[in-house]
Amino acid sequence: MKEIDYIELTNPYHANAIRALQELVRINSVYDEKSSSEATPYGTGVDRALKYIGRLARQFGFEVDYCDNRASEMTFGKGEKLISIFAHADVVPVGSGWKHEPFGAQIEKGRMFGRGTSDDKGPLIAAFYAVKALKDNNLIDGYRVRIVVGGDEERGSSCLRYYFKELKKEHPTYGFTPDANFPVIYGEKGISNFCSRMNLVLPGIMKISGGEAVNSVIDTTLVVMKTDAKFESFLKGLKNKVSIESANGISKILFHGKAAHGSTPQAGLNAALFALEALGSYYQNAILLKIFAQFRNFDGKPFKGHAKSKDLGETTYNLGIISYDGKVLELKVNFRYPESVNDTDFVRLFDEASGLTSEIYSRSPALLFPIKSPLIQTLLSAYRKESLDKRSKPLTMGGGTYAKEAPNTVAFGSAFPDDNPHMHEADEHLILNNFYMSMAIYARAVHMLGNLK
Image (spheres, rainbow, N blue to C red):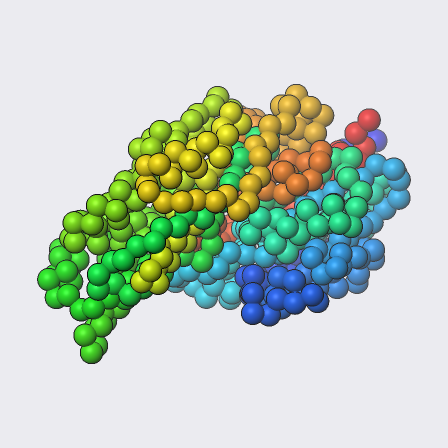
């Protein structure tokens, strides 16, 4: 039997895939509470994105189920074996600092820019057209392929929990989610989000507000306060950037930082921490300085909330949302940890050190998949044969994916080694040559899994 050339197989689909990706990226699919309803549980933007990919799949001959408008399920083929691909159409809020239009899908110097290009619309479209290439060439034979596109991954994957627990959908024989890194991910840290509160009076300060998603580093924080010229002079002497507007005795001070993914808070510059430190230092507020100190190193060491394991690495704590209304200070924290950690115990240590009272409002346990399993080895082989990268080894990561919600599933691509697509940051982008390569990798992977004995 002639060896299949998966690059040659997917080449004819490049132009249409790029066009489809641009159309999908141009849909603002950030969760929108205002337009959330029974018909559009995650808002109208997310619903438009889910319906777009569903309509495309139906045109191409896939069976489509909109799953109570929480996910778009697209299936092709016949057979007992089910190969599933889990991707998501929702994206994190835009944030600030973009040089390109966040929903413009602009192509410049071999890169497409836009929110979702890498997380996760680009990988979704690459996998979708990889499956279409297999379908069109009669290579989905004796097995089924199912692409499930969720609408609420960025807020905790309620969509996929609904898909399996409420709709009782079939578990895959083998599955992967193209929402991480190549060559393949065999382990993911546990993730718990907790909300911390404290009754607090900060004289002269009326409001503090920063952050839109708990799993992103806060890039700007607004402080509204009575005008204090000496404090403003103090701020101008600091290294970090601030913007100040004053009128009628009230100042609006915007602290600027740098966004990053919540799994790597050290890669960003948290504007809320800058604000806490500046206010605490100038006004000698021990409470604010104590809270700031707990996040200084991002690893939990200041309050003895640190742990590390061989496979999953160290704990991280990302302050993702801050608010203060003149009476109550509220923080939302994204906590990621190795398999040995009891999250309740570690959050209690944080409370004891900070003086806050916290409640865990969502959690996702750690995931470790056997490296020598057929699933991991098959995906690794598909990556190596197409990319010719024989050195890269299976990885673990701090990020969380649908692999935690879907049985027999791991994360597989689509960021390549040494690639930094700026996920959850300004100017998120996708390298087009990598996009094309990932199509060939996914086509080979699905075909190999479908024929795995």
